[in-house]
Length: 322
Image (tube, rainbow, N blue to C red; front, side, top):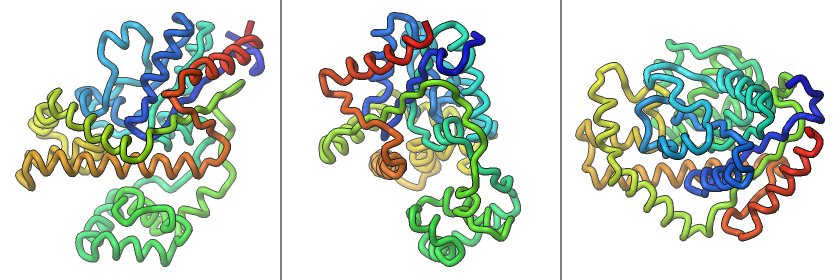
């Protein structure tokens, strides 16, 4: 579809914390659009084959009803990056628009959204040797000690990261070690051109009240365990080529169950830790989205008129593509 940007079908981006109802809203929207929409997953776990239960991957019937993209595209042993996601998602969006349909982006991996919609700074590439040194340092001085060191070299980044967020704390230190510049300076530099032309609706799903949301997260994780999450992780672990340092195995829930299977703690303790990790992840997602200010429109998915409001906005954008 070789149309100017103002005549392309709109793109709907739906994000929010885990377990807030993003997927349900996206599917309801696609149903109301009567086959004129396709979903692009924005989820760093759903890209991997064999990681179905813990990633809340849509089942075969759901994917048969509504076309989904960027699901099951990689083996869990393969690396993937936000920059690569931006390329893959931009191609999927262009193809969906080429069919005259509305692309619906849905997921909670906010770095992927940023890479696609806003662009990323050209950060130094990962360095395995430096990462090994940082892992050893964390073992030696602990999470608080490593976070304190980050505070000395990059107080801006340290202020927004929890000491237990090992992956991001160490990545920020890695950037400083490799470049001599704080990660916050890199992020402040001008970004590449936006990859999604035309009208864009950014919708953030508002979670329930705190107590109800905590209960919902606990119930959802317990349901995953009942559905076979432990067995799913056991099958991945039994392959022999996967380990906990891989990005795929850092996914919330998988790491805690894997450590249970390694004998570090009981099944009940693994479930408790998985629930706590999921709540912490949801909190980080909320912090990120709130930090985006007015760029995202908050939406209560439980409000009866919520979907109607979205459809009005989509129709307004689609009218220019007619």
